[in-house]
Amino acid sequence: MNQRTAITAFRLLVLAGCVTPAGWLVWQWYFGDLGAVPGEAVVHFTGKTGLTLLLVTIAFSPAFRVTGWVGFMAARRQIGLWAFFWLVAHMLAWMGLDQYWDWPWIRREMIELPYIRYGVAALALLVPLALTSLRRVQKAMGYRAWHWLHRLIYVSAALGVTHFWILTRADYMLPLIFVAVLTGLIVFRIVDAMLHRR
Image 1 (cartoon, one colour):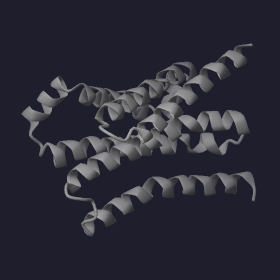
Image 2 (image 1 turned 90 degrees about the vertical axis):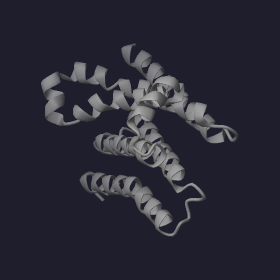
Image 3 (image 1 turned 45 degrees about the vertical axis):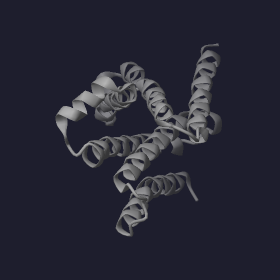
Image 4 (image 1 turned 30 degrees about the vertical axis):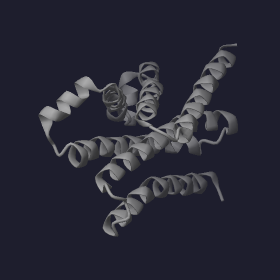
């Protein structure tokens, strides 16, 4: 298998991994297997899926640095946009299935509840990253400016993990995993930058 074929296969694998949760969610909804409060289950599922994909997006750069395989970089934009899609779905599910599009109440929740503010801020920071994900935009901005802008993904991920942590009431295993993964990725980035400068 040549490199181009391997990259194409990997991109298809990434696509399948990002789309499959939607199929599972539709299946569970159709057969009524989402529990007593299906709307809440959808909100939680979309949020966890989006945050997971966001961390995987960040992890693709260290994976490339360690292995040198360009397939990780070729698929990074793809999985990053899917992470954005799932997090937008999470926000819409919260507004529609949990808040029933009650805009005065939604506005009040955003103002009064810290975890909502963290979540909104995390998603807002991803908007410019999604809008500048095209290669021609990267060229127009210049690589240095584009690169600095896309470092906001770390801030967004930290806000997202904080949002999830505050929401958790009993089992902190998954939030702890998210914290550990994000911490590891940040440490890797700092160490790699220091070694690169030397």
